[in-house]
Each structure stands twice: as structure tokens, then as C-alpha cells.
Length: 173
Length: 247
Image (cartoon, rainbow over all chains, first blue to last red; front, side):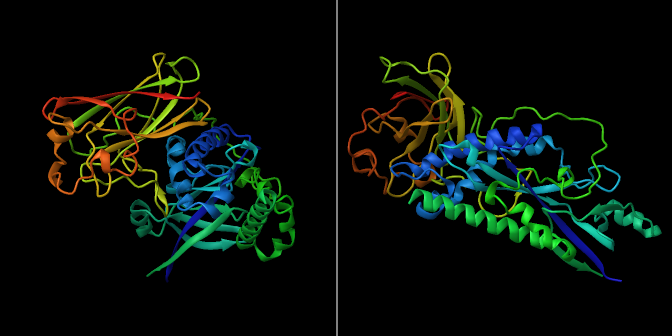
């Protein structure tokens, strides 16, 4: 039977109303960095918002990459465990090795407009089954593969929820 | 015009988040998507997986912590070399306030960046997904905060050059809250016995080099932007410069 290997993407939105400590730190850090880097593009113009800069200033799309170093320290503090997303017994279980910072909106003069997303990409998972609103998944790791030789594999039940996407699907024989 | 643009940006935000919600929801749930589109781009802030009140996910039941701690941007470092090879350059930049009798400006944020020995800059971020194993992608870029004497010190390599430009270091000075005070570039002395001639453009040599007088940035005058550079290729070089900014 073909095995379906998927990667989940969790798009974690962070803005001025975020309440968790990690989210607040990321909010402050990305806003300061956005403000600093955006002034490299806004010089000599009246533009202050991210949308204006994107539309009118060449290379302003680099800003998300330029702001990324302001979150790497916070990403590392997560210890490769994806935040917020729990299995059905209330534990975080998804691991990630890749992320991408996305600036949604911001403004050099208005912190309240600042909104970013951290897109977390899970390690590859085997999608075994779908039970009601839940995915039954296991890590597609070498350790799990050898355990699977006895037809036993450690699995997790995870509820489908907003801001989770299956970002890639690959069939393995 | 500004308001129009702002409204447009809200519309874009609302469209993209509703599309995402559509893509992520089961068929049976799509009728409820209005909850996340009511106020456009900023409506989705509290939606974060298990904490979302609109779904029935279980609440976390885990040992508390580890607690997040303040972590500066990875630009913040004194040694910006990141394994780039070249002659060691220690850059000592002193910032003073032209609006306050040229007294030392402490607490200012100073960003510098320059090219490597071959004349290449590091990429900023780039496109696609970033790995958490994410070091040295911004080589030869760094940030320091001025001390009570207005001084920041960076360890780097002597910059190379590229076609059309004299050797230079970019500097962006901000106040402590991140408001830009000055964007400028540091020029290098280029006469007999200068560090520039000692380094001699590394492997590239100096053929085709653009000197300060012909440089499109420095040619209108570079006295205030030219650093003092001492040292040698064996001992390394020390660059010192004072920059006045209106703070």
C-alpha cells in the first residue's frame, strides 16, 4: 500500500493583541527590526506602511528576509517543537526544522498596524488515516521506520483546525 | 491617497486570510468563515491553534515552560566575520550628536555592512523557507549599541571592492527606539602607504578600481566620511572614525 508523507504548515499570526509571552517578544522584536530596516527603503519618500513600500519601492519585498534575523533567537528557544498545536491528549508533538517569517502589515510610525506570521513547517509525517476531524500521523523518521518493521509505529491524533495546512504530499511505495 | 492605499492593504489582508481559512477548513465548517474576516487583516490575532475559541481543541496539559527570554536580533554581534577570509579589520566608530555640541551619543544603534574580499555582499534572508540552522547568512553585517563614549567596535575583515565603487563600509545610525538618524558610508584613505594599497584588492588587484574622487557616492566630497586606518596585513588593521549625527 502506498504511504502518504505530508508536511504540515502552521501559520502562527502575531500582532499587538497577542497575549502569550513568546508571541509578545516576537511582536516587539520584529516591529523594531521592521521599523529599522524599512527606513532603508522609505528614505526620501512619504511611504510609511509595508504595503506602500511593497508597491512603490524596488526591492522592498526583501524586508521579510531582512526582518527574519530578529526572530531566529526566539525560534531556537522553541527547541524544534512547534508551538500551540497539540495532539488529542493535549501535548505539543510536532517537530519542525524550517520556518518562514511573513510580514502581513506594518507601519514605521504605527506599531498597532504591525502583524506578522511565523510559518512553521513540520518534519515529514506519515498520514495513516483520517478519523472524523482528526489526522492519524506518525513521524516519517528513520527510527520510526525501523520500529515499523514489526508493524508497530508511534502515532498521534491531531485535530484539523484553522491555520494548519497540508503544505506538501508525497506518495511512497 | 494614503488612506486609499491603506484600505487596499486591508482588503488584501482580508482576502488572503479568508482564502487560507477556506483552504484549511472542512466542507461542513466553511459557513462559519465570517468570524475571521470581519475586521480584515488584524482579526486573526488570537487564532493560534488550540487557543482558538472557535474550535473545540483540547487545552494544553503540559509542564510549564521553558519560559521565553529576551533574544536580540542575530545582527547584534561585535564579530561579523562569519568565516569570511581576509585581513582582520577592527572598526571603531564613534557617534556624536551634532544637535548637542557634538557630545558623545550613547545608546544609539549602529548597523554596518560591507562586502567580502571578492566584493560580494551577503544575501538578506532570501526567498523560500528558512532553516533554523541559520547562521552566517548575513556575514559582514552587524549591529552594536554605542557606549557612554559613543563608541561601537566591530571585528571584521578589510573589505574588497567591486566594479564602479571605491572600497567602503555602509553605516546606518538609529536612536535607541530605532528611528533613523543617518545613513552614510565610510571611505578609505588611498595614498602611498595606505592600508588600501597594502591590501591591494586581495586576489583581484587594483586594475579597474574606482578611487574616491571618481566614486559616484564620494566624489562630491568625502572628508567627513574618510576613516583613519592603521596597521598591516600581518598585524591586522584598525579603522577609526567619528560620525556626527543629529539626534
